[in-house]
Amino acid sequence: MSIAKFERFVGFSNFATLFTDSRFINALKLTIIFVICATSIELCLGFCLALLLDRESKIAKTARLLMMVPMMITPIVVGITWRLLYDTDYGLINYMLSKMNFKPVPWLASPSIALFSLILVDTWQWTPFMMLSILAGLRSMPQELYEAANIDGAGRLQSLLYITLPLLTPIILVAVLVRTIDVFKIFDIFFATTLGGPGTSTEIVSLLAFKIGFRYSHMGYAAAMVIIMLLITILICTLFIRVMEKAGTSI
Image 1 (cartoon, rainbow, N blue to C red):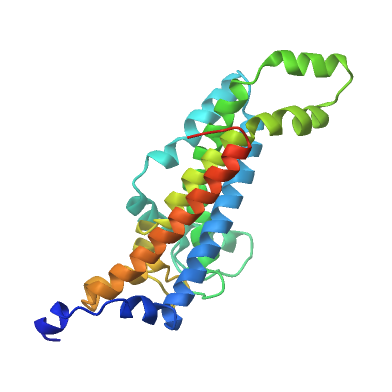
Image 2: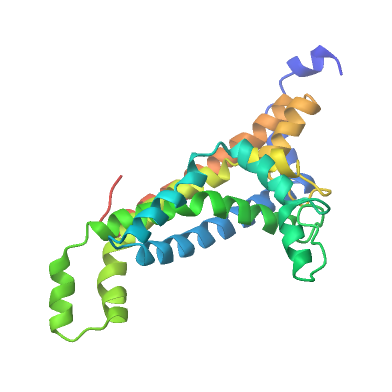
């Protein structure tokens, strides 16, 4: 490809091509699925763990400390580690399954479960972030409200639904916003584990842009992908901020 082709101004043709490019549309769909699934699972698990560990026992303190470890590991190291754990022939996970008389599972080699396997990796690493955010909110709750509810005969479930959740809503929204932005940018884990495979079953937008830009040298087309993702992220942030303003929270 000639240098002159790189220098030719193409206007908005790259953006027009994107929305007829089945590979980009597939990557965008996979990215959105990954963001929704990973963030939702992390929120649910983080909320449950925060409720479980909201106490001052030695076991709870130790558990909180240990759960922070995945967050401290570099994402590329997490990807390499889980690629080894997921290995069909020699991975620890399939070894444990074989001991229970289960057949080996092609965690990263099957198009139907590869994306789910990577969702589990992200969940393992970033659920502690959700837990810590919600736990911080629980620790700031005014205990007088719970004491009053207890006097009025409210049970734990009623206190959770009518006191804890409404007061935690702003904190949950902020935590979800931060994780949503972060998950949209994810690259390292996919690069270290599947590189978009098998086929294009785990080829998210950031990985596709990397391939288009640095493998095929179509920098303009790759930049158009990144700009589209930026605009989607800005739109999501705007929606979240409006919801938080209605909930009485500001950033």
